[in-house]
Image 1 (cartoon, one colour):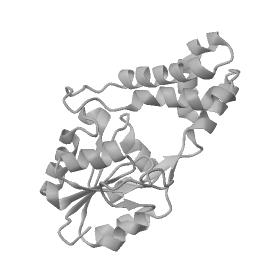
Image 2 (spheres, one colour):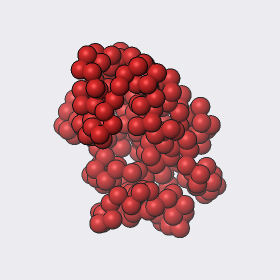
Image 3 (tube, helix red, strand yellow):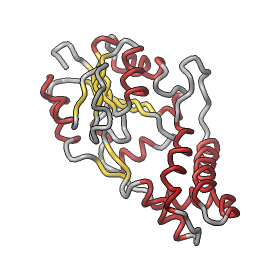
Length: 234
């Protein structure tokens, strides 16, 4: 990042915060609480198959209306796909909604250690801060729950906005709210496709956060192991 950067936008999940405990642990606890037996040898495949549902709509797709009912239907279907691969008893697939409700009750979030100091340092430099996230409608509540919301000038939750990354419109809406030009904004996220490619296509600059070194050959934008490295470019 250089001195012409007037706004920095962040992805939320696995950029600023992560599930605690992790997804697999929460799923297994949910199933155990409900008496659903899981074949752990098929769990990884099930998670991969269900997670294919998380792929964003094509950039040319229409804006989508938000409803809590639609969110509930989506995540119930996610659990249904997952259970279809790893539930020992086939009839337990029909308990997908129960698993979803239990998962939500057990779900927690943890903010990465370096996040608050980095946000404070950027704020001290007069940078506008925003969040652009493919989320399910409750991101504002999650951020308040982990005492992170006050760091940001605005939060764009795709469920409410109707556009998902990598659609250019969600990035351009952030630019409008920050009152900057696209080239004056930097987007930071953990997905090469959703975050980096989406931001670049909308005219922003981008940084990939690769905490687990999952993309060692990535070269379309700067790649950083933690957000601390972001400050080296200010």
